[in-house]
Length: 348
Image (cartoon, rainbow, N blue to C red; front, top):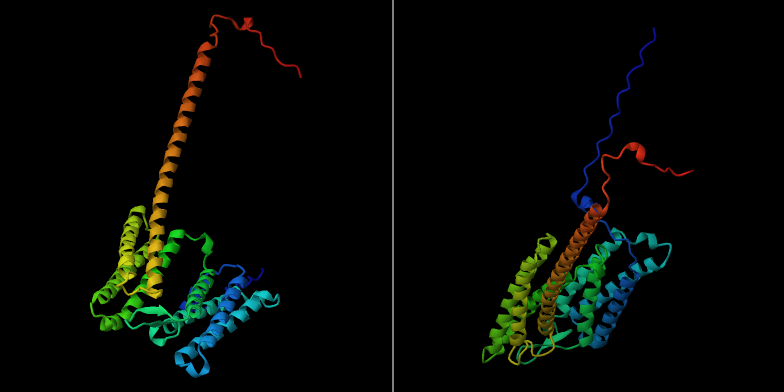
């Protein structure tokens, strides 16, 4: 008798260690495989221009800690952008880009410029902006002011490029992001200037309008947060969008009149001035875009209805022609015998 071969038991596989939550989160995030050499190069030159502008505006004897912070931030941003742009340019290091390493440094630079803007754009630090004798903000060095905002938007574009293509994004979503940025800027700057303006204002008109700017900024910030959440949850409807956009354009339209007037807190070119006008412009664009979408949808429905009517009329005409052909054909009597019917077959 043959001996029974021993049954092989399955080998126990070693238990895998559970992934950490943050590792699983980053592994699930898929980066877009695109070339970002131009974005890093633009950020590099903007950082270099900011570095030179601050160095030129403040000689060594006038550089305090805030000015040194602006110089260091610009230098670090230039160095990191130069290194990663070179990695994109060189063939041997190009394979190291488009991954978590590059995304990490883009987020670091964006966060650094957001934090640094609170020091560079603070009127009390007298770097890019300052205040006059009545407490109203004005731009002191236009190059530093403009380059700060350009580097912020450039680094934001770089971060968004890992997730989506900005040129193919929903235009309404982009407008709501800008309205959100304008609202939060309006709240922060008006609340920062309120105490100084109210202390120097004798008629209390400018003080009340500064408080009004802070109030409508908070309301607009809440509305934009609601709109962005509805977009993320794909629950935005034309009616909800119209209600939110109408409220924003009404508040920003009245805010332009009250805030940027002669007795308002934004009589000069300043952060509050640009935030108010940008918020009003993007809110107007939103409501115009909604009206255009409504007209386009109604025209599409009307064209589809016309096409369906034409198709139905065509089917009716074809049916009538088929019925008329059946009636016009001669009817063969049943009394005719099969022998009288001559069938001609084709010759092959």
